[in-house]
Length: 67
View 1 (cartoon, one colour):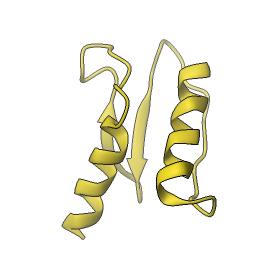
View 2 (cartoon, one colour):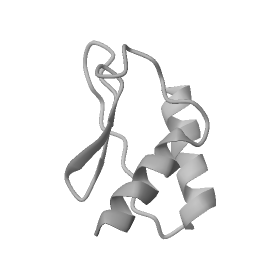
View 3 (cartoon, one colour):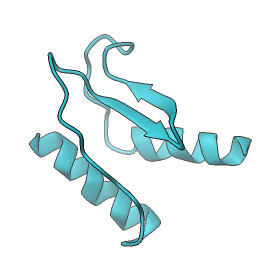
View 4 (cartoon, helix red, strand yellow):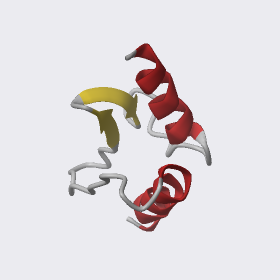
């Protein structure tokens, strides 16, 4: 959970305090990040590796640029 809360802080620093970020408890080490309901990062799909610093904002930016 400390890594997840750190990620929320990273997102708010990049996108502003009005950014809608929510943490939802998962089970079994699940860590997924969704933008507008679409999966942009899955810890399970990445071999159970927690995202590196900057990886989630990059994935979000790619999604936002796609429209």
